[in-house]
Length: 244
Ligand code: ATP
Image (cartoon, rainbow, N blue to C red; front, side, top):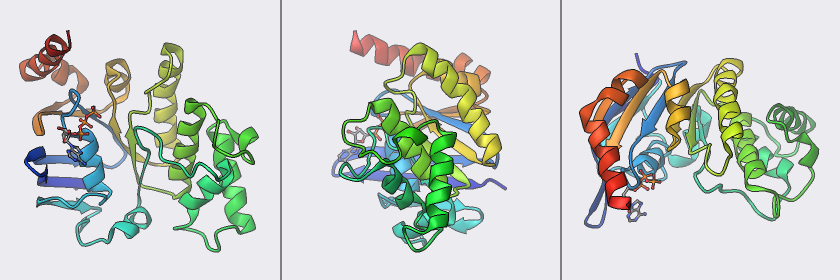
């Protein structure tokens, strides 16, 4: 049985259909890529899975139970955590406090010694323990992305949704990121759903890939299958032609 099952989900914004009858399964322990040209509906699907958006129709199951009957504020405690494409942190708070926010679903009170120790351990794991007591304002984008990742990990998710983790990284950092996501999956026993435009990264680490285009799912398969799929080639070449 899939850990996450998305069935025929549609979400509209006024006249715009952002996702249209999308179905996909994410199996436990896998790294699953979600790709597609700009505006394909990838972030909208993340927002539906995390209950930021209510779908107009369709069903979502996580770990065998409906997600749509889970109130949005309980999604994290059910085991789903995420990062955001453009980084969503509390700018006036320290790095450590931002991470403690993520742990709040697991540990109370907010600032217990145990919660702080765990948050510091995770900050160390993602390589930024040295800035734990600094305000997030003014930190480089790459560091902020790690703060977000730490905030997600401290919530002890089973499913981690990563929205464009390679955005803003240089080539060398991207290749390190691939190995790091695999290590994360193993060390934290995670399932990862990854939205990413960096094809080298997705093709290198994903066990399975789902492809969206104009809100519809146009393909799924292994990285090799997806790269050979004529509908996928057309969607990406079409996008390149339009951008040229
Ligand atoms: P990108 O790769 O550029 O981030 P995406 O695949 O994540 O794109 P979405 O951001 O999900 O795509 O957008 C899908 C479509 O839905 C787009 O046409 C977008 O303009 C529209 N859309 C998304 N969110 C909203 C919103 N809040 N209000 C109106 N339209 C929206």
